[in-house]
Length: 337
Ligand code: EPU
Image 1: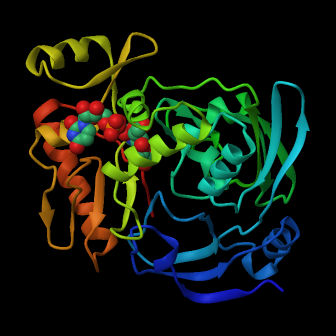
Image 2: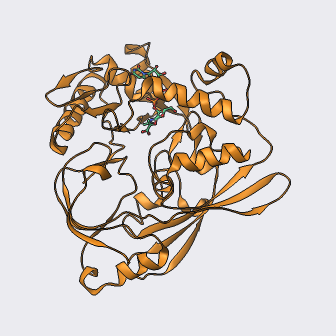
């Protein structure tokens, strides 16, 4: 029986551990329960907010909405040939449990995405990525439920309109659909993506290259830089890496020859936002209960009892400093509510 709670404390449902409440909260365990919830008369006109683990959210006030936390579970092999498998994964599965499952089964494609916090249903929304791989590289299709019409729709990879930390679910269809299942195309023949950062040298320390050691290397690298939300509440990268045009890039590289960048499509350049923040002297900066992490300047942390506004104010301060120094406006990666 689906339980619906009132004035529900969301502290455990956001990795910044902000203490706000949801006016209504429910965690449906099946698509039928989800439909039952959305069909209830009293909720028809109430705004809805879907959260997985809340690992990419910043709450700045109580949520005057129905917060839905999908708990639909299941990982199922639905098709295979000699080269590939198609795996259907329910939105409520913990992302890294799915990665661990794939590695155990010998299917490659998601090993570089090891240890990313969050649930499977959130992965297509922001096209999660790490160490040279993005969700768009492995997503076959995704099923979603229209929140108002209660109709099912399947989106192909192309229809998701993926871009860097972006998709149709953050733009045209923001708030319109709930992802119910994600289908992955994984490979039985392993080809590894090892070109990002220190991944190769981390693997050399381990010795062999296979699915499990790539996963281990990624986990080691993440653990050495990124704080575990359970130990030091945070939401991963707070800002996106900005993309600048050729002209702006030339100005930047002339004034800041050490700037860290990666060539992007269409003659553009992606700049490491962490480097910009670091250059402003803000790495390890702390004000009251909030701060910039000491090992990764893109990560903002809650040292305990911070409010969402404390974190937001720090983010705005960083954005101003970076703008004053480089003339670049950092975009939030985290969703602010
Ligand atoms: N750097 C600094 N100072 C720092 C940290 C990094 O100068 O404090 C420089 C270094 O030169 C480093 C470069 O910035 O080589 C890039 O740093 P890193 O490899 O840590 O990656 P990132 O661009 O900061 C992105 C993703 C992360 C993902 C890593 C690894 C975004 C917004 N972030 O960070 O994703 O784990 O690459 O692939 O694209 C997340 O989205 O929440 C997230 C953690």
